[in-house]
Amino acid sequence: MKKLLTICLIMATTLTVNAQDAKPTKEQTVQFIKDYFSNETPLSAIKMYKDNDGQATNIYYNIDSINIQFDSTSNTMTVYYDSRNHSRILTSSGAWNSTDFSKNKFSIDLSKIELINISVEILNENKGNTALVYLAFNASSGYLINSYQINEMDPYDENKLSLNDLVLPITAKEVKSVKIPIKLYNVSDDFNHSEYNQKILKSFNHLRKLCGAPDPISFD
Image (cartoon, rainbow, N blue to C red):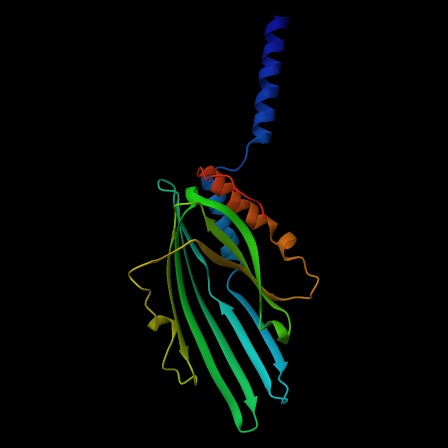
């Protein structure tokens, strides 16, 4: 009887430890990523500065909701997002306005992504620190990511163009790396982008490994 109780206790302890050590499943990780973008988007930031002639410029950066779809059978993640960047320059003869529109779609087989890392772009670098933080997805050898993108500009804000007018190309451009925006904000020079965005980076890398992706050849 004592022997039976001992075996039962060992089994119960083992099951408890295994349950505590269990990592998120593929489905749980995908849901976490979807919830992250649902809570964090749309992204927006404003940059204001004056040029050498004293002309004031305001730039309004906007990235609309980022939509994530995932096919667990093929391990393919499809990412959609739109962006609008509006510029307003105050000149001596009046205000000049323009808007850049962009539509983006990426089809990524996560089982063939060698490395995901954080990439930071300082927009208009010499005019103050507005940072756009991306996750960069880097394909393994022999694989290319399908990228669909279109960019158009309404140079005088005559309302002749909107995001609804943009149609993604039918044929994909095959690329080795794509970037998905995760943050857009005004920050100081010493802001640690990598540390701040670790949770979403780890979740994507965890999903990548669950899909059977290879280990990075180099961590440089």
